[in-house]
Image 1 (cartoon, rainbow, N blue to C red):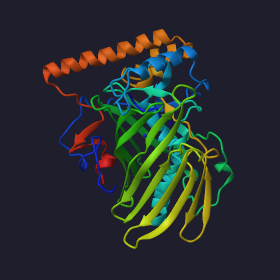
Image 2: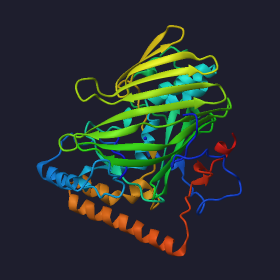
Image 3: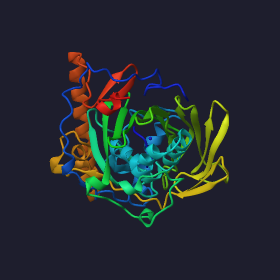
Image 4: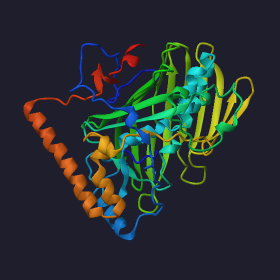
Length: 428
């Protein structure tokens, strides 16, 4: 089972929680080499739809109750087959792209004048990166990616929108909306690719880069879920690394856990746990705590953060608020700033139409399941999903018999970590 989230320590750890990933060596090649993905074929995405706000129907509740009766508290749900009606009509790989819904904030990190400003910009971006994954208030589950499944997209970001947030005055173009730009000479391009590199354990990798800004992010995540009574908890094991090549800086970050609450009535999602952001070169680090709601009283979706310069033990920024609402930042010079995630401009991703996608790309791979879910034909959707999963099992048995391990297309295992095959990533 993948995660329900709507949206994914200084010691680096891979998706199994071990070791430090090394930089990719030049001698290794992936499965068959990345296929050519033509960015000029990409169009502004128009399939991001709100999920229906209905709660669990009476007949669905009986199915969930029957499932719950067979589970034990703390039980690992990885191999539990969940009912199709809770699916969200998109793959977990596509959901990870929602971390980039505010690409202007991500690219603005490189424009920070000092290491302090850059780490604060990264924390500001990080705290606003989770809310856009929600497609309505109802918690649903994305498709479990099939091994070898990929997802590609990009964003066009107008160059005049990329600037240090603390030192630049807002302009009218910063007002809420859904901006976009087709004139590449006036825009930065941010490219994104995700791939399912392992089935047991379920490891997803995603990578994005902006060559002009010399910025790239490499992330690998292993989702592990467990039954908690009337909730389901999903741990996001692994890490991401942001590289600013212009500054020679590397920011290592982890991800919070997610919880689907009230699974028998109107399921909703909250994030929880402590995550870290560390830059060894500059000595700056940040601790972010996603607070789960107390059993009695208390607010939901609270988050607090603290940015520290470790060599001097100085707190340079504090933040508090809601990760899907308003966030207040207080800086070391006494200034404060409020970011309201509801008013941030959302940049729609650009994606190629289905007819130009390969057979293992997420929307093409799951197109029949998605079509039947939109028609409300749960039985047909379940059958299409079963066929995909059975095909995966058959191919896995063949590889086991041949003792031929799966070789991903875009990512390669280095030590205990996974890195993307990119000249920009290797340039560090």
